[in-house]
Image 1 (cartoon, rainbow, N blue to C red):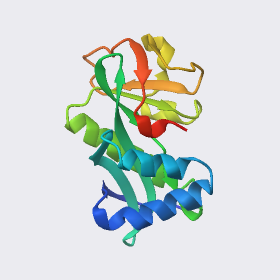
Image 2 (cartoon, one colour; image 1 turned 120 degrees about the vertical axis):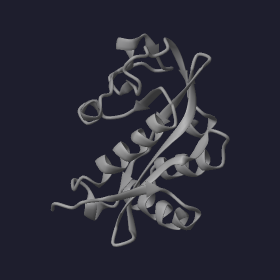
Image 3 (cartoon, one colour; image 1 turned 120 degrees about the horizontal axis):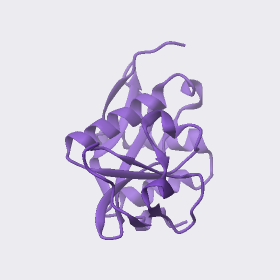
Image 4 (cartoon, one colour; image 1 turned 90 degrees about the vertical axis):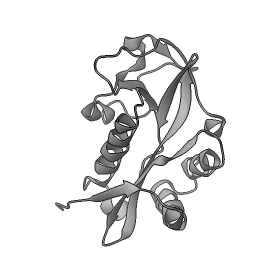
Length: 166
């Protein structure tokens, strides 16, 4: 299925659709609760929460929230959710790219994530340890991306927002 996706920052009118996308993508796992908790915290950055739509239906959602690498502000990407019928159609990728572009345009510098190491390198993410960035539980899923190639990423420990607490 080849689709050209419309991506945009989410609006208040999208909340029920975003909740539905997260529920259908993840079921009753913890990811939908993370989105709800992040949205209720000071870590949530509404301008960096993006959706992909088809015929005005929200089919994918990605958000960037505030975190820190030691004392340096950074962003954390996730969870990224796509309705099952639109998985593997590029909706998730389009949403991630739109959110990263918006972060770059906003002057943000560093993005980290806990994600599938075989999926996120296509966006430029590399293992966080390559940059001297460590999380509470280092592993191949801990990844980092610099949005400004002329500026090195900060080194240190990732401090995720409280909404990430399981």
